[in-house]
Image 1 (cartoon, rainbow, N blue to C red):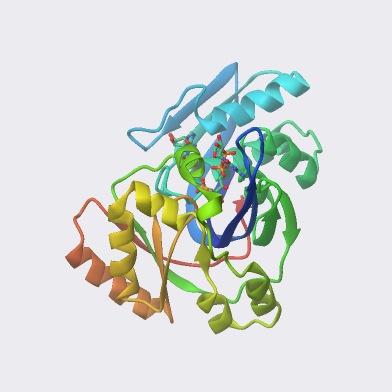
Image 2 (cartoon, protein in one colour):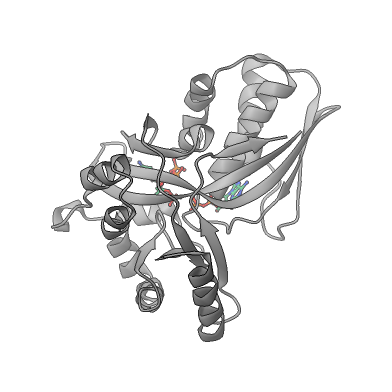
Length: 289
Ligand SMILES: C[C@@](CO)(OP(=O)(O)O)[C@H](O)COP(=O)(O)OP(=O)(O)OC[C@H]1O[C@@H](n2ccc(N)nc2=O)[C@H](O)[C@@H]1O
Ligand SMILES: Nc1ncnc2c1ncn2[C@@H]1O[C@H](COP(=O)(O)OP(=O)(O)O)[C@@H](O)[C@H]1O
């Protein structure tokens, strides 16, 4: 079976507290966008075999797909094996949850292929053991995420937003960003409540005006070039925002033609190592066929 596994962005990303185990209590609005990886799953004779078009993606036990498969194989003592091909389109370690959405697709695929009959909530509980973003990737759409990011509440569908996704040639470690965050120094938190109101009222302008990510300052401290990139994108768009822990920067625009014009301009200005993509918000996370 084939699954399209969609990337996410964070319309708001707030961090409220640090737990004693180092994890952080967050409050964020998560949103899928039209960028996706294609994953093909088939039952095999034995073992978990991953192949991919991506030159540097691990194919062994450190791949989140492998971990997700292993979790269900062990828990349910499944027979045979699984073969997976990952057609990777989502930039890696980019703040777009590429690994998490692949893991989510794997849980859903095994559930179907072996007829386990698990609900989305039951799959999300298992996904949360592997990564905080995985439950969102299973549920998809527009969700308020609290706790460490795994407690979800469905929000009204986001009005369609067009954006340019700018991924610089840099991989950012989420763990490093959270470790370097100094909450005592934070003076202004994102207005998540305002964005929820804007979603309820389908007020696109109010959504865009209140997009905000608390992790920007920490990532900018670690990587000055991401701050510079945000300034550059902001000068060409209505609003720029870093995605998740970075380093991808999103530029929000009025429509698809403006997105294409900004894409062309950035392609001229930035080195060819940047990936510059046009996307829009979508109201689902995984699509299977
Ligand atoms: C920042 C966000 C925003 O959506 O996404 P990305 O930028 O990674 O896409 C998430 O909070 C990331 O989610 P995810 O990438 O799944 O995190 P995990 O694999 O569970 O954790 C990676 C590391 O980040 C830190 N971490 C993660 C979640 C959290 N609430 N507090 C943390 O401190 C921990 O140090 C953990 O070891
Ligand atoms: N299937 C996968 N797709 C992408 N990255 C993966 C995958 N499996 C493991 N990883 C690893 O997970 C890390 C984070 O990648 P990713 O999920 O794309 O980023 P982010 O958490 O910033 O959204 C990378 O170091 C990458 O090598």
